[in-house]
Image 1 (spheres, helix red, strand yellow):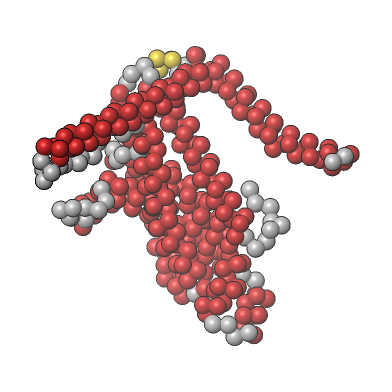
Image 2: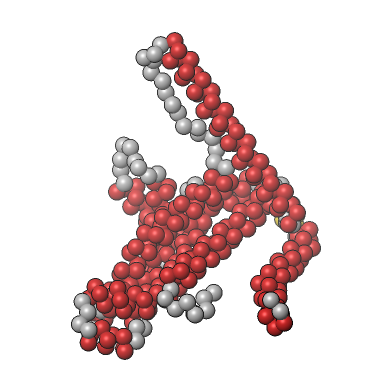
Amino acid sequence: MKGPALLLRSAAVLKGLIVPLVGVSVFLILWQMAAPRIDTSLGKFPGPVEVWSQARNLVDEHNQERAKAAAFYERQEERNQALLAEDANAEIKRREYTGKDTFFDQIWTSLYTAMTGFLLASVIAIPFGILIGLSSGVYAAVNPLIQVFKPVSPLAWLPLVTMVVSAVYVSQEPMFAKSFLNSMFTVLLCSLWPTLINTAVGVVSVSNDLNNVSKVLRLSWLTHVRRIVLPSAIPMVFTGLRLSLGTAWMVLIAAEMLAQNPGLGKFVWDEFQNGSSNSLGRIMVAVLVIGSIGFVLDRSMLTLQKLVSWDKSAVLR
């Protein structure tokens, strides 16, 4: 690589790697300078160094909890083996470890809940959005409902969802915890609309030329959707999916905080209520993790969009 090509390559590296690092470094320096000047009821606001220290503490707590769980299962297995040695027909019991959830357990719980609600919302929103986009009659019928329910806050949905789940989901051996269903349905109700609306807009925006080609070829309704509508609407569908995914992640944290359901939202609220000198640092760790996961989810959806998009020359960000 020589000459102009090398210069272009260097400029691309500078823009893609070094510039973001400079931005992050400046942010960390300003944060470290400003933090000691902010007094709260729990002490000084934590700077990056304190937050890093608390992040390492959370990792240590996770490892210690896993060690306790491993020791518990080892003792249980030894006890059962001893019982079987005395009596081959002895009834042995295996119990699950019931230690407290660690920070990483809370991350997994939140991710699982958010992705379940988001996927269910997408399964509903994409076909329904296509139907709305193709039929002006259906659009006229449901548009008032969309406009009414779209701006409703998760804080308003959550009490209703909680009451309905408690009334409907009654089982002696429930497959899912009610706390999971409450959070998941709240996420579903709030993340449904961006995908629904953007899918409908994408379908409506299919060019008349393509629609005329479909008519000339006398494509069936299903083939028209598969060959003409979906490829044309994919950019808007993914715009909606990315907005819905971000909404799902934000809504979940709020729902977990309000309902005290397991997850990162509950972790933040518990630390706030705890009021120890380390709480602010641990909350900041959670804030950074929440933001980082949201960023990774968005980049993952963008990568998926690039893979399935027919227009490889389109600039996607």
